[in-house]
Image (cartoon, rainbow, N blue to C red):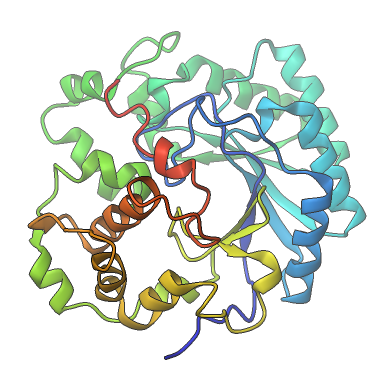
Length: 332
């Protein structure tokens, strides 16, 4: 039995908060306005910085949630990163906080003084359900005026989002009416979605399913848990393995093989894939559905059962609120 061992961190980001002004249907982390309004503390950031530098990473991006919902605390995070000599590649935002050109320029000027040279601004039909395109346009203009570089994510959608009023939000159903049947499903490919988190829950009924027996028969170790090419560290002092939201490793445990007693679910997944986790859950009453959209869908169903039905409170199934919030906004 091998233990997951995160030996080096390459490129990644900090999740300063999970609460957000939106509940986007593609959100990997299940962010929403319903999350507790918690933010990364200076002490936690110190721990994260020490670990990142020890494992070879000296630059990060800042994301959430929406980091700019708490401007004062974001400044504290950026000041601490400067002290720790960790560079900021960019800060992610959906522009929902913007009230005026002058307000935006003031915030952008302060960001520049704190070492932030680039703002990643979200642009997509998913975000347009919550943030009018006009705000995005105004923020881009303010960035150009202030000397802030813009990373438009994703620019391919900007022109088509002008097909409806830029002053209002628009649902995915409205975009489907605008551009025709299959438009929303095409976003999986066009956006390059990772079908996990809320994106998995939203799209699971729109993609082909496979029998649970097939998924289990093909199960092998989840090597993606060891991928550190786009890692994330959150405000709770957790490392999120791969793109597997709802799984967590205490940052202090990075750099050495994980203890199977402390991380039984991650150990089972890493060695045997979803079959390993299913064997663990079967012992406490879990019974799978006949079919799932993917092995990740089955894995999420198992983990949600362990947290919500069995009330397992383990270090690796975190944050617990993720399992409550992943489905937020899906009926809107």
